[in-house]
Image (cartoon, rainbow over all chains, first blue to last red; front, side, top):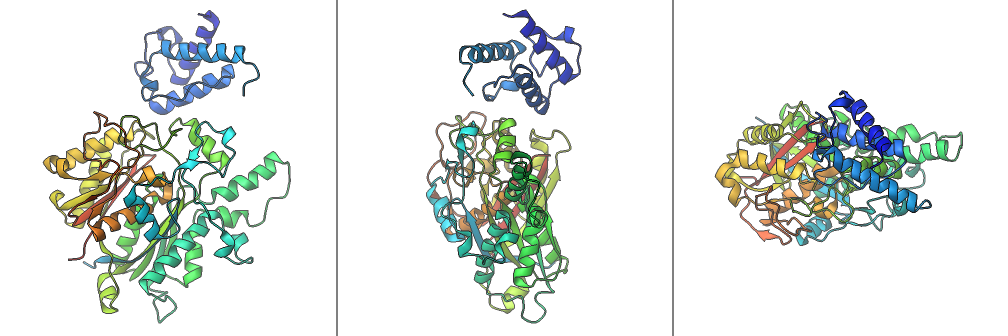
Length: 88
Length: 404
């Protein structure tokens, strides 16, 4: 896993949820971190804006999913964007 | 206390251009959700909507008037003409205009005009905004146009509470007539919200289904936007009786509440409060309710929360109580939702048949009520509740019953 991507992701989550970045672990869920549903949507938007990617639509448990889940989705989106640079 | 009855109804939406067509399609469970046409589908993730089809504004409005009317107001006028015609009332006779009110809910007002004006300004760099933009966009426009059309000079205004706007409008009209401030009210809701801007905004909330609307079922993926209007003639009971009007049903009560918690996550307690207040206001016992038209948006969060609330209020009666969401067929028309669903409530009362929850696949263990999956059912229905729970946690439940 690209460490800088992980780092940037943690910083976005920390900023959105107003918590210390050091408290975030891959196993934390957004719920554990005190991120409510609307903030979760906003956090995903900020991640998309920052990395210029589109994450898959939220499944019913997206906001209770772990940070690792988000990171995996992000990495897949980044790999997809790199593989198909012309895709809209 | 003065009682309030319904003596006219009109509707236009994806299911049809009249209330009768709307009810027929609801009962058949034929979904009007299809590929979106109003906006370029390639710009959307979820490419479906429940749009009004085969609609020609020029068949309803002359060249002079049409430029003043956003699609939202057009829909409200068409629905109101049908309702007023059914009621047989002429508001220009005697002092009826003065003794009547207009209360129309909308979620976003003249969204089509708004989107188009700003697309020209920002997108085309065209510095000229159409001078009628303001009068088309304002959220009170549907109420204004109804008052002008029929010559109604009593209390008239718009009501705004997102997806509960129509039910708040019914509630307000009910109180206005009960209090003696009017004898008749045109009440309902109107929405025409399927624009690129607003659809993208809904998309960003990640609550839109990309296949279809499947309330309460395991495979539900969210809501599908709809549009339209339904308007009803509410009338003080003695006023209706004296003139020999055909009474469709009694608007028996309304229950309102606010969650005062999360902006978007529905609260079971808020829904329970609104349901209980509606029953109390209508003087109905839970066992008297024979059908609930659910809010049933088909979002992951709403459906289990609404189901739990119904179970909490109705106890054992919940097991034998049909609950369906007609949003599966007419989509979520936001501020017009409760008004379209009033067509379902009145249909169930008058025909003793419950419209189904269409597009239903498999049950979700979190949703354990009788959702009348896919096929309508005959049922003994003495009274109906219709639920609307809005973003912002603003809840409104209305109760209608057969006139005893």
